[in-house]
Image 1: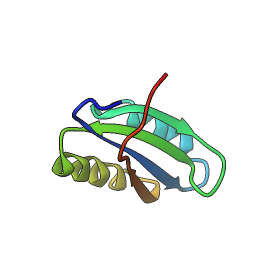
Image 2: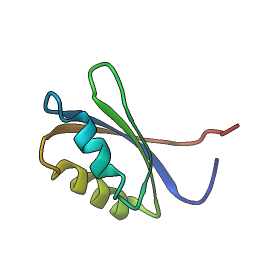
Image 3: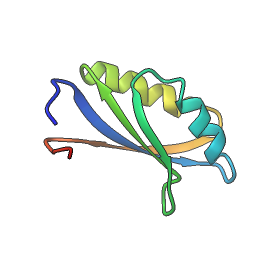
Length: 83
């Protein structure tokens, strides 16, 4: 999985009923590779790949500024694999 990029998963909590609206807005984000509406405490899970921590901070702030986003939780990956 090591691509030289920083990979993070961002969990997003939205206002009720805003999941699809936010999902569609995330399609426009350059660093967002995958995004899913999920069940549970959070409403969406987003996978991002960035060059560095500053770029990650920028993506997180852009997501947090979206109207109807209530909160986020970022999980930074250490290592992993893809099949």
